[in-house]
Figure 1: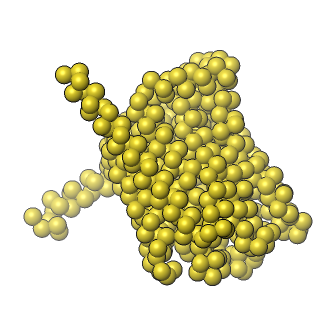
Figure 2 (figure 1 turned 45 degrees about the horizontal axis):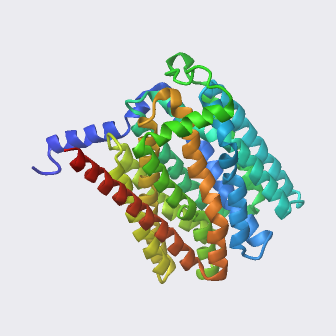
Figure 3 (figure 1 turned 45 degrees about the vertical axis):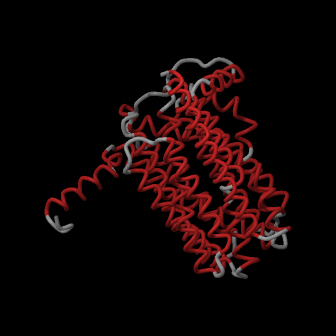
Length: 424
């Protein structure tokens, strides 16, 4: 059959409808629109913050960028017991109104310090820590809120579309940030990000509250420490969750340090400016969008997809590390973004779908503590490798994390097959 025949066209239309099916729901549509605008601002601030630390407040210090990442993304580990209990018993929409407003305030505050010329490195550290504490509460609530927007049947699709929006913003934000940093300096990008939160706050206010799935009202979860212990016990008795989270720990801790990889390669290896940093970040976003759209077309995530994408992540990190020029490095980043997004989106969907709704907030707090909190644990080490050896060796560390995660999945598969054969 010709690919241009009417039947083929119907197949394409059906496939597109399946890929974007969550957008049929009003609440998800308004959420998606607000999130896209806000995420563009967030990516602009990330580029501005890295560039501020790397070139204005230090002399190309990858270690300093790693410390900022540790402070911004590390608090979920410390706050995990409290966050998990909160996520399962609050009105998630109201919680998001509070956390998104607080993050807007921190962006505006840091922007004013930069514009007035008063900013110092320790102040950036403080604001990064504040943002990390707020994000600790925002992230698991935001992740589980998606199920309230669409329900469990369309949850994998909605998660994948969320990732598509986030990475579409990554495609736009860094490129715009590179131009604006050169034209205006870094300060105005923090202000723009602060104002961009108006979009997501408006979307939360415009939702039809009666159409929310109301999954968050699951009853009291007890004291924070007890609630989190319940979450850990729940995960311990779910082998698929344990393996998925272990793989996420490995790749998240040592592999997802893209601000360090891309910024240090831009400055020290290819001797570029903010335009190059923004362009390379956008190149990676192309792959991330592709990976998210591929995930949106799948019905159910499986551990085999996690294993394959972790292996692909290791391969693409290796290729990026050895690329001789900036054009080939940018091409490798497209592949790296595809593999990274396939891995993280599939892990998110698998963890949520293998978890009962009443436990989802606590389990997702564990997930976000690993996803956001463990990357900063590896960031200082990866930054030190980039400074002491080269950014190419730092990418080698990321490659190793993908290969080891694949070995973990393979070992679990062998163990499960052996157990089945023994039972027979």
